[in-house]
Image 1 (cartoon, rainbow, N blue to C red):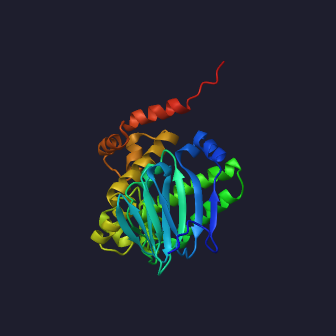
Image 2: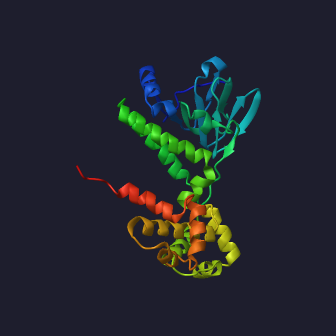
Image 3: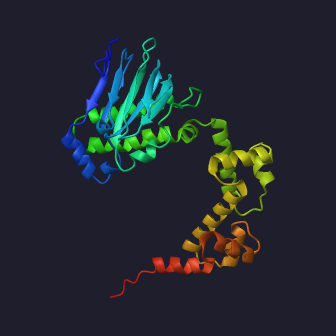
Length: 304
């Protein structure tokens, strides 16, 4: 059976020259994460590659979008199907190849840098990117094309650094698959619910509003709304409301000379002592001290 390392019809490959890689290693941004090789192999029949530990000087990401393949790491063979990816660690012997009956189509990147191990951790096994309404598969591939295009534009340093920043995004979309999906393509009705709730809070900071009021505004039960809000923001609705109120209080302290007893009802607290305690707990200092620091910050002396 023939084995082919590269040379597939329709393939695209870029191997960065050694001098450019050395320049990236010296750059404050480039040294964090940089690409050494990048490519795309469509229907890579008989594709096969094997490297010893001494030959593996960077991490290798392979993303299979069609067909099937396999990889071997630490004497363990793993089968790969479409919509799966894996990342091979550096300095570890490996082998990989295409399925002979159903050859894979893959996007691949060789990369290294100080942050490379962080993005690679936990992906030395088949990892799924399940196709569904909000998987953002096309957007992820668009990111890859952005990286490829930047590198293909020539060995200009700015293009290389742009490729690096895009690589951060691309690898982040792999490492944080759920968050990447949710942030760009979460159920829009859910996104709207959270934004509507926050808007309602901001418009009513001076009023005494309860959880039932906020949930009622977006026409959801309090339990479902609370779970949804915390899932999307990382905070309970009432805790988030308190943060908004303290934020508004900081604005009054920064830009007005109103007394604390005047500010507290404007941000929903009739009891100014309770407001002061909550402010101190949130900001780490009492409102009076916060104001003094603000005055000091803006009270510039222009005298000679």
